[in-house]
Image (cartoon, rainbow, N blue to C red):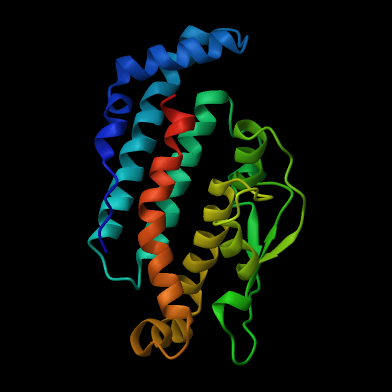
Length: 220
């Protein structure tokens, strides 16, 4: 898999001095006290998140599809954390904010297919924090199925933001790659169902769409 996303877009966020200035400006505008000191303290962490995100995505681009979901999902997590840090220098304030913020069924039913799988949004965690801090909405504690999520990617008026949808799908795929080893191996190797082309095409699409879509939160 290759991605046509140009990571040089993020080069300004590799420079600690520049990031410190950006954080100071944003924290000051938000009325956060001690904004200068907080910007100095948080700049190295934000730079690290950006660099780690690129490393995960670049590694995914040169890796077998077997592990691409895991690499892309953790790359997206680093971009989410960097974007949240742009808004809130005190995150995480509670340990439950460190969780992914979503969950999936632990035991897959017989004749399982990915497009029939579901993912449940939790009350706390990274998904919720990103939604509240960057999208200014409180996500409902609902269960989404993959059919709905994939359809929303092409919906002109989706109920979820594009980055929310990508997060939920990548989370589900990463869980399959990590914990449903037998099914995942069979799907990726023998391509017995329609799941394989859907998953493969999504991973290619997401490799560009996620880092590109996150630019509006990190660079604008």
